[in-house]
Length: 287
Figure 1 (tube, rainbow, N blue to C red):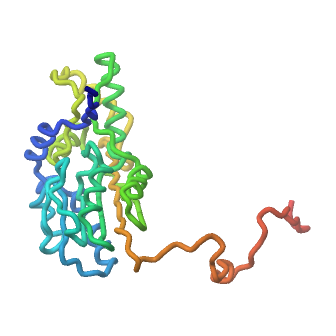
Figure 2 (cartoon, rainbow, N blue to C red; figure 1 turned 90 degrees about the vertical axis):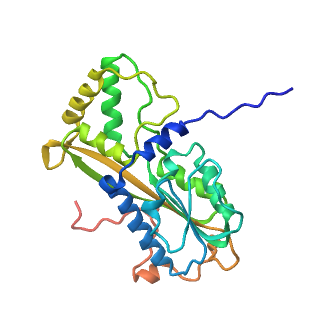
Figure 3 (cartoon, rainbow, N blue to C red; figure 1 turned 90 degrees about the horizontal axis):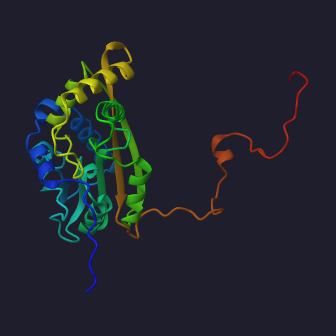
């Protein structure tokens, strides 16, 4: 009998659930506020009244006011979404912890009706690059090895490609970079705990790390990554990636075939068209 190969888990779901249960977004929800405000702006720009929205989020109390009368869904591996049940699905600040982010987007797409809108906000690959570096250097010095301590978040181009793989039309991926300053690395780690973003990787070391590891990490962090305007503080980079895509529908705009344009860009800009392959003409005043 053939054996099935189980896909390795990136995330420890029990540890992640405990981390999120301890979160205190009333103290450290500023990045969720940024993401929520940006998504609300995008919904205003869409200029459409959604009658059956759903929001996938680990923090339903915090995201309940994103869209009126939205169904709030936990970001489980199998989402509690019925096929063709919604005209809007928002995946809010949870994709970066998904073992299968493409699968999450596919499930959202199946829950959408034709011409339904998918939106998402999640941390991207530039998030916490300073902390990753300081931890890696400190651990190499103190223990002589490395262990997974910060989740490997996807790059924006990979997240954009996931929209196409999920079968969504008119895909868009863009980013909002944010730099935050802290008094020291331990203040940053306290904020991450309050955000529910502590280490929940399945491959993490289960033994408590030596105290010297984090002491050395904080020293490296302070030396390598001071705040731009105050060398007594440190900087921490966050990147929020926003995704949008539509379920295909006949009424949606289609891109023109190459060569099918009816007007020249030069005419629209009021400029002259030139051949960039031609050799330049030197004027007498040119050296």
